[in-house]
Image 1 (cartoon, helix red, strand yellow):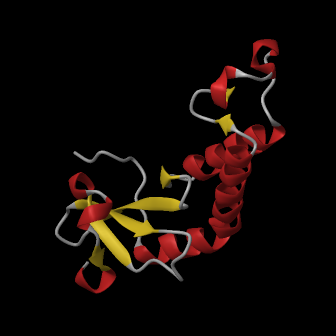
Image 2 (tube, rainbow, N blue to C red):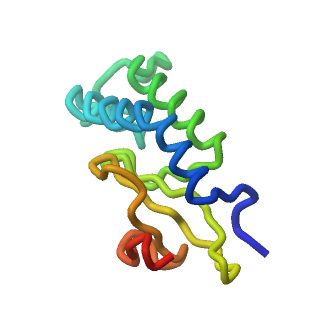
Length: 129
């Protein structure tokens, strides 16, 4: 039994990446903007607890970021790191093992994969898929 319902072939992952790359880049930018304004997106507060959050206000950058994340996740892509634009595409190897095809925003294309339990540290070149 597999952890994920949706799996990508390498070609499907590459096509999806081409489509979502601008969103991933924007996601990274928005996170940087939130950091620069002192907003902690994980706690939904401005650092130091100061800010208009008691009134239910969220910066528009956060709302845009949430929309982007939802759009990406709905396509079956796993977001592993917002700061660096790290994403994974669930994939089934020829031997039946469920793994992740791995990409970071500073990489030209999908060049790595890793077993699910190994995480980013277990990345291997795509030639060894």
